[in-house]
Image (tube, rainbow, N blue to C red; front, side, top):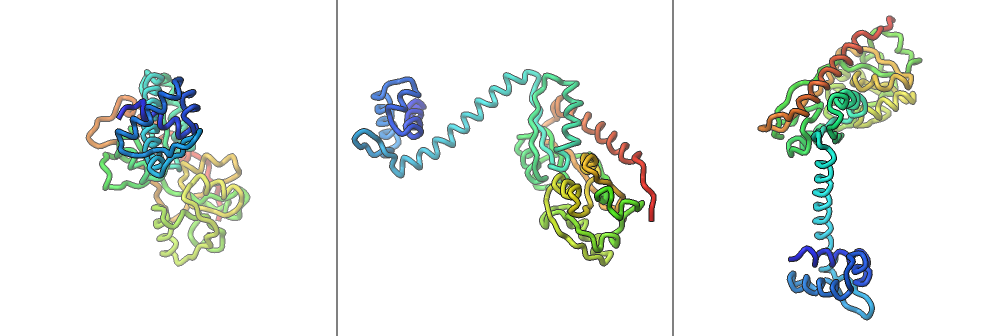
Length: 307
């Protein structure tokens, strides 16, 4: 099966006629017709019904076109990959991250990394831990940052951080004066929760269950970024990762320690059986440094006293 025959078929499907197909292929209408006839012979399929002045795709033609489109998308991805390789002569670093960190910590780390490696191309992908794990397992990403490890994937891992969750609230909230917030303090508060199927929700649920406190959950979302924005709108309080929450302080929210502590972790994951590239190793070194600085800044932030 010749590529030129498939290309002619695709052009006819897109334009609706052999004449228009010939124009975009810079050839003649008879050449396009011959290519279609040859493709039908090679595949054993009747791709078009011939009618006076036009051709109409058959059911087989439509099905075949779907497969052709998928193949052309694959070719386009190869062309894009070749272009990236040409553009990024300094290499390409592919990073996968959970949404929690993709809007703050990761961009700040990339800024510092880019100052060291200005010629390096960087591709960033954000999603849930399961999606990031799959990207690393498939070697679509050189390094991933997840909040939960999935052991069924083939990767190696190391901890990036483990921090205590904080209670996030509007600055004028009645609990903002407390040195620490406890489950009983939130008994009657509108609460913004992780989604039901989110891995982190069970840890929070367990703390409130042990304390015998029923939360008034008014909103649910799987993303910390949305949670922080909702808190900033005065729609409730939430227990969140402080490294994510600090990016929203400019919106008039404050963080207070929550007791008992609820841990928020992040793990670095790498494709198993393949040594880290120089770029991946350098980025991880920068990311660890930025993370340590931001953790130190959180610990150094003045704490308000209170009840």
